[in-house]
Image 1 (tube, one colour):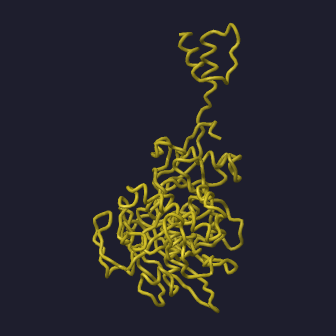
Image 2 (tube, one colour):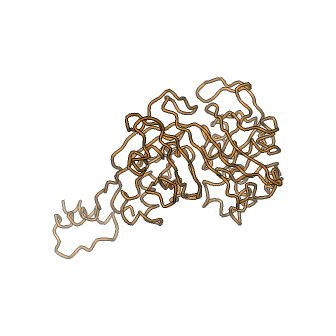
Image 3 (cartoon, rainbow, N blue to C red):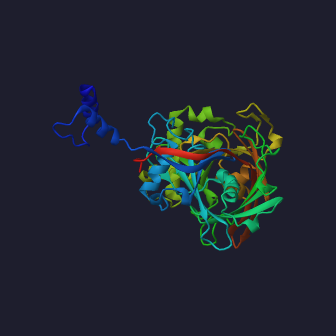
Length: 424
């Protein structure tokens, strides 16, 4: 017994002080005491749009994590199961994709005329890194419902039956989002017959309005051009629309980079060389957009910008086997998130697509047939999505008042997540 316990201690390395004369039982007790027990944190696991994430009420987090910093990041990493060199997040709540490695922290609002503050953390899978640089448009669909259920929305704003208008302050990007959440008998209505491509089962429809997604003081087109020549050393020079709406996005013509715009995930994600090229393009696009000063900084900013490629409408078969006809859509769009082709479309990228489509002359608008429009329906790997946008021009400068789309959300599990107490 003594030999087994001492060998176990020695294999753990230094960290405990063992005095001469300690018995095997005492040594074993000391070793066991070195393992801090797990703690549990109230949390809810929710699907929002085509993403899933772990939602927290700010005040339920350990006190040290109720402010930004290393402790908060460490907790979220451990909850999700990152960093995982195996790329599976088996020992956490993450699903080993950019769509399922997500966390959300909500709190009573700090802003006038709003109900809730929404903070989003994109958790890297294979790195000890949480990216706070952008929003998740898909999970936005779940923010209103969670806020209502946790009492973060004043009771007098929640109807007994009807639609609750939840005014969300998106704290990452300092923007207003409005979610229209259906209510039945004073409770959030989650079930319904609204079908969203990329989600297997129908649910209740939640309309999400992204209000003024570009500040009047910010440049929607950081370079000042609707279309630029983006030079990427070692790869080529490409026509690109670089836009800051919803989320910073670099749009390319699919044919310019050797694609049709009808690709599914395996065509891109199974090609390491292609993924490396896209990441290089993304890094140089980030520099041109003024998001970073050198391409070496892109690795620490994985969530933004996004890279997407577009082409005119064409027939294809979606990942579920659904046939998408060219007459059903205005154009095809494929987008990458966290280094991989997305299985559907990020909600924030959909805002960028809808915005760019309404502005004549962008690559997105041209792929959709050009001219003025107030809405666009595009094809993505899982099916189609319609996005409406209100854009206006004043002296050559474009502004967007609102971008709208319909999503759905559903609570999958609620209770507590557990992590080792020494994770932070």
